[in-house]
Amino acid sequence: MRFYNFTFPLTFATVVTALITIAPAGISVTDVSQAIVKIAALLPGFYIASLAAVSTFSGAHMDETMPEPAPEIYIKTLQTEGPEKLTRRMFLCYLFGYLSVTSLFLVFFAVALELVIPSIKQITLSLLPTEYLQTFVVVTKTTLLFALFAVLGSIFITSLQGIYY
Image 1 (tube, helix red, strand yellow):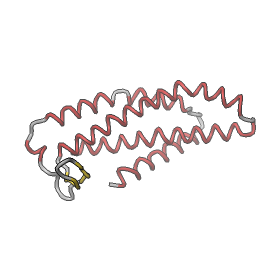
Image 2: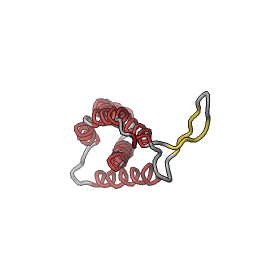
Image 3: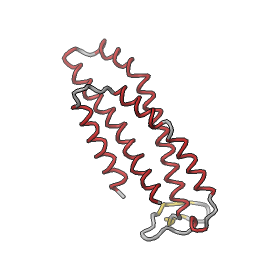
Image 4: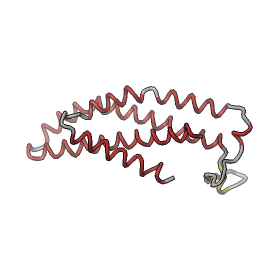
């Protein structure tokens, strides 16, 4: 599971960020965030609809415990406390809930970048000495691209898990 949660998204983000950073065309963070907004703006609605469909589907097999090794979560209620094995319905509801929130976050973050980057450019031009400006731009661009693509990679691999189940 560690591969799905960490390794794939971080590898995906590293490769794509490196390709964009060394691209001779000079792709900006604003260009990337605009492309992500165009693509990812549809995702929250899709994931919320999927969550509603999974939570209300009446199939009896959805309430069976998942096959071994079944994923577990720690649940604490007034009556019980401890690990509980997930049913298919619970697993898919957690999965699509995570995807809904993460895709909303990605869209808001990308839109915020589009709105804030011009102001950040003006502030850094006025505050930073010229010799540090290029380094600051490269580090900031790389960090923002890596963050965007790490979240996008996580959404992608988790969506594939949802399609599988």
